[in-house]
Length: 134
Image (cartoon, rainbow, N blue to C red; front, side):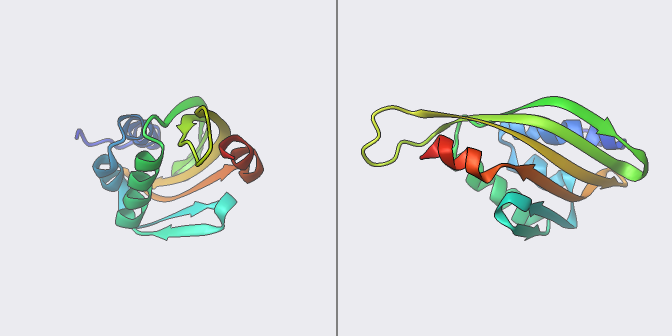
């Protein structure tokens, strides 16, 4: 992986890794002691390894998951905000006759320092997600 330095390059590399379902690249983009807050689920992941494992689980559960970056705002001090749409096909539950499509808008806030992500937090609507998968 080519080293990246600017916050925008780091976040673009993160979304590229999301698109490739590359949990190893995601691991490398986060600081070892980084945190990730999944605000809708009231959960915090501690450390790059736990963050990468969480993404690996998501990729396994939603094998066609993909993100479309709608806009990105880069601020001072390494702050980046990304508005995105996540799309996937929900796994069929028992009794389901056809696959359900997920289309979920969200915002991710990231703090980048020295070419790596120190903190990220994701905001999306749990009720919208639940309606689409149930």
